[in-house]
Image (cartoon, rainbow, N blue to C red; front, side, top):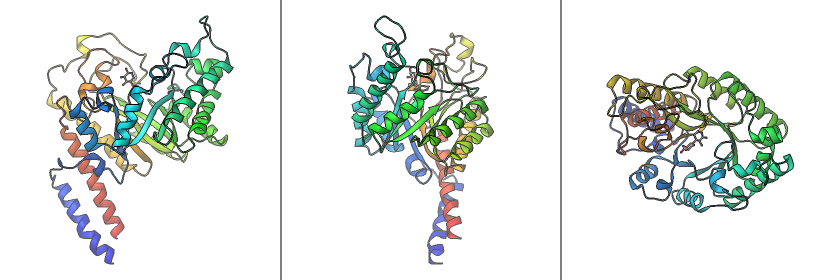
Length: 384
Ligand code: XIL
């Protein structure tokens, strides 16, 4: 009874202030979402090095988790066999530690942005299975050991499954077979037994990819391999995915008993040159003016539709906050989003929560209000 007396008025104040559309600009997203999930961003070099001071201010204010946008990819970390380059990754990790953030390493094993030497011998032929396993082991062990106890979670394998659920015919798959996935998780776990280990992929709302991922994770679990979470890359376009399909995947993944994470979130406002949206960085298209319609400004109605859709996804994440451990945006401001150059180079896109002038979009307030509304509702339920 005493608890009800204390909690109820508090909940009501919160609830009323939210419904009244109170200005929450003084608040920050990490507080707004704190009972729900971590909220974060992928950082580029000028951010973790501290040069882009306005972006750094946003990151410190709003985010409690960071991921490396590029500096931990294998072509960056080991451009030549045995020659590791850690300067940038060290700075990224130091930034996270200084600011008390949950640090995610991206990514240990991925067919893209891997150095060419990884898969060939000195004559240019494919390496043997044993040699590729050895190279994987050496890469993973060296990198994970260096950041043991500092990087809290690793995207161990990225994008191993195609939209139809079959295995991607990457060099890892062709030379080693599907066992490369299990091995990658084992090597990472051996190097840091306390680190969380994830599988990360795009277009996870596709039924085929959803089922392929579930089968893979189940098999790993049956074999006793540690896997803590599934990262659903959130590279959205206006037409794909549907809330329903995305929600189905959140639920299905969570039923495996692993954490679900919305990784790499951005919502492109531009026309997609592809029939189905994905995020395979090799799928690029030529520039055409009609694919770049908003170089000066955004029409009201276009912006409104974009905002509604983004808001809808955040509502979905809040609805499933018991399953979702983290939501990470793929960048901080529109100006530095990779979507300006992929899948078409040289466009002006608006996929993130902060604009090119480092200002929060009105959507930031809306999603924070939504989060506070949830907090208030939770308090009311607990008070009963
Ligand atoms: C992107 C980066 O944002 C770009 O800067 C880089 O040029 C290409 O890669 N899926 C992933 C990310 O897992 O690593 C990719 O990041 C985007 C798609």
